[in-house]
Amino acid sequence: MRAERSVLTRDPVTPMWVGTAGLRVLTYLFALAAVIVHHDDYARPTLGWIVLGAMTVWTVFATAANLAEWGRRPIGAIADVLVTSVLVASSAWILTPAQHAAITPLVTTVWASVPPVAAGVVGGRVAGVAGGLVVAVANGIARQAINTDVVRDAVLLIAAGLLIGMASTAVRRSDERLRLALRAEAATAERERLARSIHDSVLQVLARVRRRGSEVGGEAGEIGRLAGEQEVALRSLVSTTAPESNADGTSDVRPHLQMLASGRVQVSAPATPVMLPAPVVVELAWLVREALENVHKHAGPSARAWVLLEDVGDEVVVSVRDDGVGIAPGRLDAAAQQGRMGVARSIRGRVDDLGGTITLETAPDAGTEWEVRLPRAAEPVPTRWRALMNRLTRRDGGARA
Image (cartoon, rainbow, N blue to C red):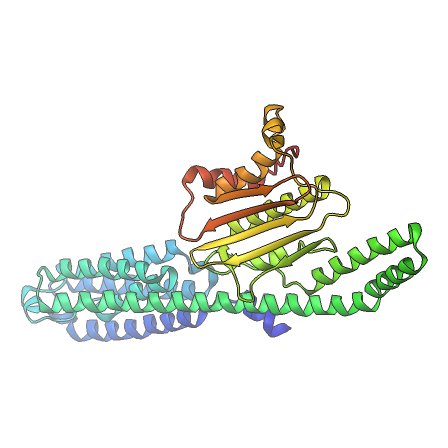
């Protein structure tokens, strides 16, 4: 349990930050040795020692910042790149023309390669490439030329930022998957514990009430029937996996619908996950819940309902069917004219917000079936997304027809 908490709270790229700090110190020592060897030949030796002093201060500060969580922010990486670029460019006034011609190492030398690496750790490959490009430009300014050596250094700086950025992104994604797996494992373990406890107490009592009610009949039989429905609903609840969202913002539709099962509602879903954007999944579950609420209110006291989830590749299809009294022809239009917009607003409006389509099949004494089709590839227009988020934050179901 302690190891699980450690995984959930630690920074996944901490080892990369430790490596970056070690690389910064190692490259600083190399730069120090280079300055000691070449300082007598500098055009401005004093400026060279001042730049080295600034490198020393920044190395200490940046190393401490990288090893602490407060220093692992984008603003820190930006400052690192800018400070290093200024120090790199200052070599243009320190080295003599002869040293430039002989490709004498700059005052910063390989020390300048660390900021692109740090930027890649912070923001991924884009930040790493951007950091390497900025330092490469500063290196070109310091060399006062564009030659093979300058281009080679630029390629190495950009490549280092790119590779480290890709690695940090992969580490974060893997860590997020591990976090989700650990949370799902913990939720499953807790659910199993509750299921055992409930099975030994509540479910056994409900099962006994159902059996005795059926034996006695009359009002006791009705109580037994209700106890049986609650038993089925409770069994479904404790056996359903808790809904989780993935790192890419998608969620499995199945658990959200399976939790709606009860003694009068049967839910059928594929054996494999049916993934959709998490906000769409939440809204789809509310849509189905409202359709089932309509069944409960209007289909008759003995009506049963069936929810079917299908994954047909480029579409996700959800059907809600009941065996109730059905809807008389013209009833929905009459309700809309009277200002009762429950079905049109709560069901059809939600589907329109999601960018899908909905069809209704019904007839008197023939039940009702709603079929919702949501295309996977279709992206809702911005107005639909705004309406969707408004619905998620402010539920306004309205009266049912």
